[in-house]
Image: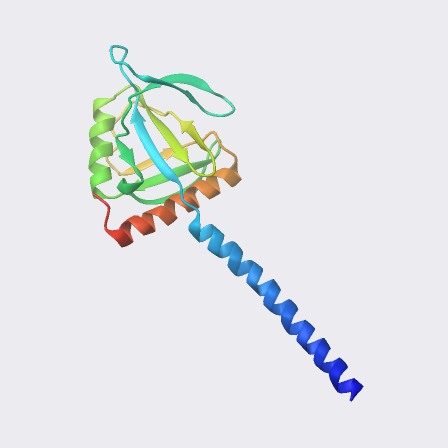
Amino acid sequence: MLTRVGRFNFYFLLACCTAVLSGCKTTEEKREAKEMTLLRIHREARANGSPAVVKVGFRSGFVASAEASPVLDERNLESAEIVEADTGFAIQLRFAQHGKLLLDQLTTEIRNRRLLIFCQWEEGRWLAAPVFKTRVQSGYLTFTPDASREEAIRIVRGLNNIVKQVKARGDSW
């Protein structure tokens, strides 16, 4: 009788360990699926307004003036991804139709000025402020964020998660 009980306990313990270990991966995947990143893209303000003064970048940090209202946000996105660039990596935002039209209009109107890019994930910060010398008709905005690669991966994952939710709810423009 003792040998059967001992064997049963061993198999029971093995089954419990397998369940616990496989549950950790599912929990991690669920956590990643719940990550959300908010995106706000603001025009650089003209000198005659009452702009908000913001510090762009964590490491390189410079001060810029941003208009109070964002002109593009996550509702305008189709997708986001990390792409390899000359400087290491960049975040590429692909805008849906309405966002593509807005981006084209904005980059035409703000020639030689900046768009200020703010992201809110676990923390929130101004990531980049690219200067536009030509208009962007493709609907793709690629910028080098002032963030580590790990942060950029989380930002992109969070943006893609929120895009899925916006599409599911039908909140897009």
